[in-house]
Amino acid sequence: MNILILGSGGREHALAWKIAASPLTTKLYCAPGNAGIAQEAECVALDLADHAAVIAFCKASKIDFVVVGPEGPLCAGIVDDLEAAGIKAFGPSKWAARLEGSKGFTKDLCKANRIPTAAYERFKGADAARQYVRKQGAPIVVKADGLAAGKGVVVAGTVAEAEAAIDMMFDGGLGQPAWEIVIEDCMVGEEASFFALCDGDTAIPLASAQDHKRVGDGDTGPNTGGMGAYTPAPIMTPDMNKRVMDEIIFPTVNALKKAGAPFKGVLFAGLMITKDGPQLIEYNVRFGDPETQVIMLRLMSDLLPALIASRDGQLKSFDLRLYPDAALTVVMAAKGYPGSYNKGTVIEGLEDAAQVERVEIFHAGTRRDGDHIVANGGRVLNVCARGNSVAQAQQRAYAAVDKIKWPDGFCRRDIGWQAIARERK
Image (cartoon, rainbow, N blue to C red; front, side, top):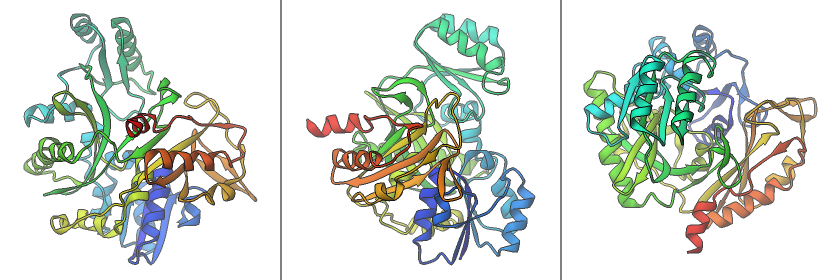
């Protein structure tokens, strides 16, 4: 089969690495890709917002199956347009992608189907939102309704912080003024990420993970797109996994099927594991980043047939197998991230780093400049490792990090600390 992956980050490099290994893959393309993905696939300069250009390339290159990585094209209806052109694609329809594209839509769906989540209200104006915050008190969570590249959520510790977040979102602080915000109770517990493949009718669990959103050691500093992750999440016991499927995933799949917009693709549930059990924080409708990087390391099964079965409605007879190992990734970012940072800085030592036992390096924001690999984004590299424990995976990942020569980059040095503390107990 000729396969096209859409995207250019570490998630897409991990997917390309896994799909390239499938015996079903004849030729693999990625648009637009990056310097690391170019080792696995032929990179193509396509604008993912130009659906007609993507379709034209698929027809010219006889593409059999398209795997969509980022949320933007999904929420813009790329899968609908590909399918209408007779091209099979992995991912939800534009309607079903509202699970990520509109936080208000998802909260209403949860409320209507008794899916556990935090109490909330929706607001289209700042005055009513501020009054609600003053009445409820803090801590409280303020969310912009639409896509915001992981920056549209503020966990406010005080009423003043919440009011500032409301003003920032309605005043265009996220790039454009929010048309609506969601304000919800602040849940207490431990966060986890949970992934399930869905075919419109049923769903099967894939894996759990935990990521590190804060930029600094000890979970300090501003939120980012993710500074590292590990899998499996220790808090996700077999019983907890079953509860998530029964109480959250299955009711969601059933609700969308009933609404006439069956969900096909991967459901990424951001969870808070509270004293009362799992609660949904939010949904993403694509593979997570950097969680995908560690999940692909643990996935024993061929990924491609599972993605095709999701699209074709054939998951009921599927069983995915994972290695029992732990896997961990450390994100190396450009100095200054998540604020302003420089591009074009040279990265060396990648070949030496990749020689560390059970290490894979997935590129997130790189490009080739002559004989050099240079940084081309904020989050630049994912240094990943497998081990018999999270502690061993961490040791291997940082051993590889220390072989990379990139004075203009940095990373957290404590990825996996929560799981390792559990292991030591």
